[in-house]
Image (cartoon, rainbow, N blue to C red; front, side):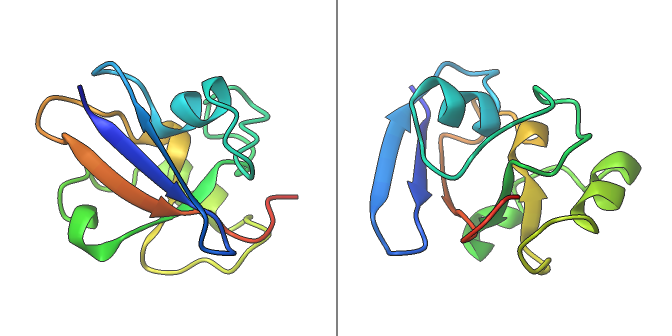
Length: 107
């Protein structure tokens, strides 16, 4: 079963196991991970699920699409080259683990 590790700004980590096909945002919301709001429900319309993907996992992800790119310009926390919307990252059998950092604020 794939594993997602969410790292809080203070360094605390929460690791959850998920079914393939689950998005990082849905896994966070379903498991009570602080700092991931997912206000729009995963439609790439609010940027309240912004995360920083660790560089060693970034190359395994699909490219940022136009909608995600536009929303990443609206994040509260600074956008970096590793910024992604967690609602746009689906865990599949090829991505058995991932570690992401949660920004200090989403709103």
